[in-house]
Image 1 (cartoon, rainbow, N blue to C red):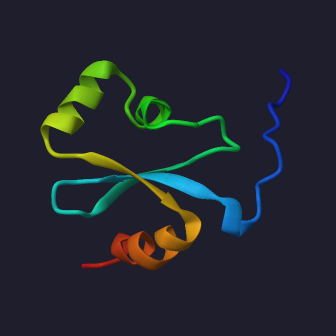
Image 2: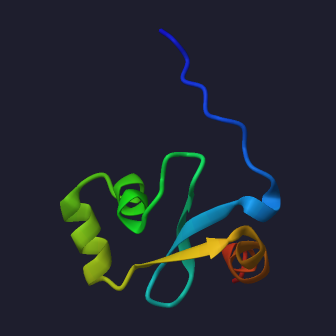
Length: 84
């Protein structure tokens, strides 16, 4: 079976992400955007949720998707992953 190769990762200052936050603002998912083929919020939801029913469930429970650049992710989101 052939291995799928992704293109080279862009420099840090050109990277951006879709971050999934629960209703309390805590991150529960992260999708790298752009070079991975994820180019829209709809694409990010497709990667995050396995089915449309799962997506609807998350949305109904207050999960939101936020598009951020890498600097914003490092400054605002990354510290929340380990916050108690």
